[in-house]
Image (cartoon, rainbow, N blue to C red; front, side, top):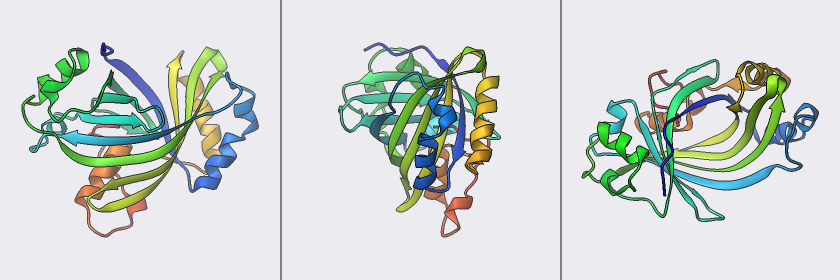
Length: 231
């Protein structure tokens, strides 16, 4: 299985208040008018973010995860570089590769760009340690916006788990697949104001890291440095 070369991921992350809000968004008439497919596609996804015992990947501002589609049983390995989130919008490098199953050392990854990049920043022989887990239902729909901007719209509902703590997850993601991002940013602003969404200041992985390292505080107010890897 061949790994993709690094791609530049450009997306907007918005936090919704609850599941009812996500359901309202799924029926939005402006989304329906721009959809490429007749129906939303649903997947149940479980991701485990891992690192070496001394967190070599994190020290170099990388995040690494194994994600499984629980219905198909297909596994995806993903390495993400450092990314800044500004008003919910983030840009970062990403390497992905379909794999047969998770591995417990980076050196056991299949040959390809993902393995090569991971081994440039972390030792391949050290056993990987789970840090954060996410489990959520993802509904996706491809939409075409102004200026031929192709966007994958995702509604995520589930939870983030780390350090014995759990945080509910209600998130809207818009990822630019083709074209300029200006139209995507305008459309995200419309959704943001219509449904009272909050620009995410953190990724799922970064939120999990805070769960791992923080004590009892209001978890919904968690925020992370812009220098924490995205995921």
